[in-house]
Length: 330
Image (cartoon, rainbow, N blue to C red; front, side, top):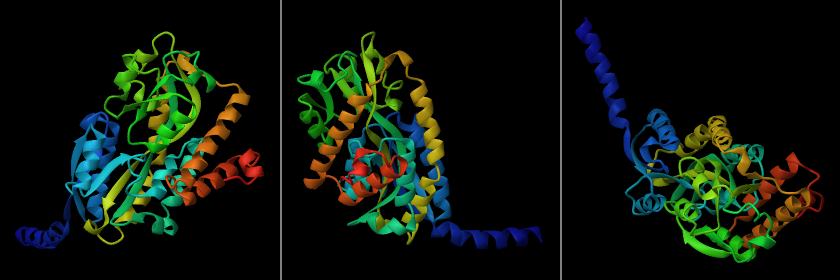
């Protein structure tokens, strides 16, 4: 009887096992296989089994290589930053628009909105589909001299600027600073060794990339959200079962609180002495400056207008008294 039960179980299980589609998921994590993003990808891997996909995970510490392998179809899915996702989906990449997401609550609402089935039509661009968006926290400006706390004082300084990120290049040029091309692998090193005067980064970069070395005794971090970093799962759509993308987006959206805890922990690890708070007049002035640059990038076709409208709607829902809401700008 026992032998018969085991045989029956194997017969039932075999088709299920055979039905699983083998796929490769290339994961960019600055800390490689030891990082929290790669760790979360293991959870995603387990969940994907329920959707008929058996992922092989591959860790990358160099984002460009991960993206290039995805383009070369060596990866069926890839985890990359929103800035890198622009060629694959301009709509979701625009969630990282300069000054577009001023708070965690706006980011939560944005991810919730675009992860719903109603937004599914925006999730596919050509042969690519967005499989989910993870929040990674506000992006701040790190300066080696905390006296550099106004736009006027940044004229002529050298700022580490990601060479592939057109919006950042435009922003640095706008304030009259000098662009020093960098990538995710070397920007912190250039800041730490004094090759640049400033660099922009999220709180998560402070400790593992040792950016406190560049801050030293005179440096500071401007407590002003330049943008909001996110990571996106991009899929080769035709390599996944029907409906997989929506299941994936819904699942990823459900871990927002878990990611928010990581962001909170990373921010708490920054020595309080480094934070530089802007006077209210400067804060408002910089907010308007970012809006102006954002609109310019929309008009140039870099940012997606539909995403900008959504973000503005969410910002105004949070603070209806903002000038952009009263005057119905953007």
